[in-house]
Image 1 (cartoon, rainbow, N blue to C red):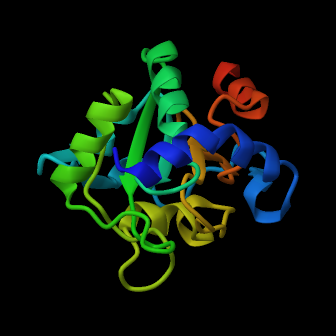
Image 2: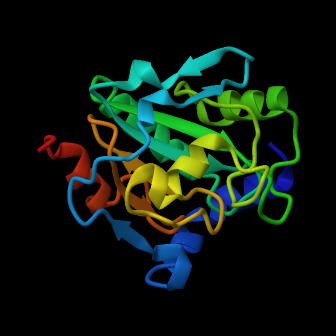
Length: 199
């Protein structure tokens, strides 16, 4: 862990307090109801940081929390809460991290370096994918294209506005909501949705 990363981890609670209730960092957008996606979530896939292909077909029957991550961000300490969430709900939830360098060059390392950082400093055991782009445009990863296009997910257009934005999908492959970086992984609104059974 670099000096910058150690400082950011130390001041993370302050960052969360400072971003509390402020604009894009606390934004929550919830689905208007159980909206069936025009394009099935389970047709997606992604390449993990070790090069193996991960089929979303294996996610049927589980909730999924997708997060765009970065190693040098003020919100990087959320890795800790994401791992705790994964451990607590492992039978019902899959946490998926997509490292991205879309915001202020906060993820410049290789896939191997990112995986090493996550394992060594946060003990990450949930699926970690290859570094990609999560914002709009031709480089946008297909998973994030699905998450931010109405014609794909059925209702949402919100792309990540910073690192550690979270998208929650239910057991039927329906997008439930978008949660900005200032919303902690164990925020009560996320926890309520995790505890709620599919309707």
